[in-house]
Image 1 (spheres, helix red, strand yellow):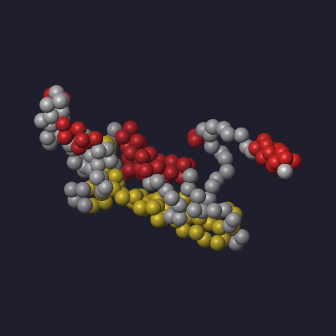
Image 2 (cartoon, rainbow, N blue to C red; image 1 turned 60 degrees about the vertical axis):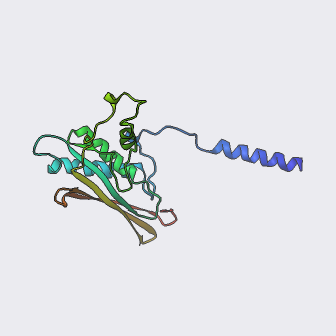
Image 3 (spheres, rainbow, N blue to C red; image 1 turned 90 degrees about the vertical axis):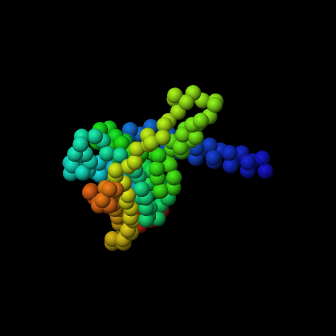
Length: 200
């Protein structure tokens, strides 16, 4: 029994010694293998394409020179993967904010405020425990002008002895005053590889 336990321990140690060492990856210079599933490089490409197209189209140029206020609506995940769509929308929000054209409200959303402190802070009105000069006044929250919505689609195909996975990141920017989409874009991400690769 002791010999068997030692043999197992040695086997585990050998396997551990053969494992690839953990290392940092520079996202800007990552030339590692491409996964058939969506990875951070795909979200980076989709977000960059969307923001560059929005800016070049003039859709986010407010005629009065001020910044538009945008709210993030529903981004539907229609893939076989568990995708957190915030990975896409956060990159878009950061880039638009840095452009000086758009700011995102966190006070309103489909499922309530993204940052609940917007309303919690206003519950301090008339509290004797707080200096009322620092409490947010009524009528100071800003309503959104624009809404960002979209869908992430996945389609799988057999191509010879390989499989092809197609992802489509579709986005719409709606002017809330009119209900009209003032910008729409689609970024296709096509991957082809082993049919043994998992795509979910």
